[in-house]
Length: 178
View 1: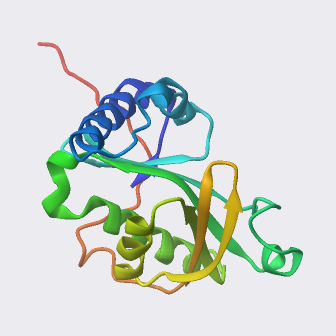
View 2: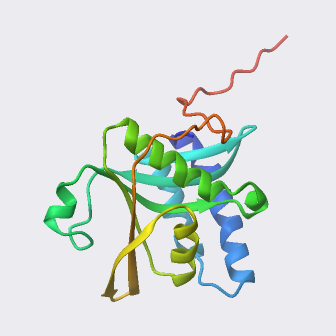
């Protein structure tokens, strides 16, 4: 995992487009209309990417502030990380990149002295998926976009190396010419 940069926009867009195609094949609503906007977040300082062998296979946006309509003032005061817009390349599904991103965030929150990792979604199927990562459904809210499910998991230190994850800064590749 590393911070995304403006140089990652095209790779993030390609990965999200692949996810959209998969979602559409499953009969699910996709983010196709929002691909450029979502990928454009790569250069804004809040997105992280999961990559392997130079290919972006996942991304998520990590914030330190709660959306006021999602969490009470008391909940928002608790030191937490908030996940938004996590997407993964379906070609890497067998490696569970979404779970790796979630676990990386749980560990990162603990390393930063935070108490919680929180996230929301509009899909009951995603709620089931996030529960397999140790998240608990905290509450539900009715919104214009549908039913919002808000989940949380306590931060804890994890052995990321055992999971095959490293947390590293972005270092552009250099090519030597002979």
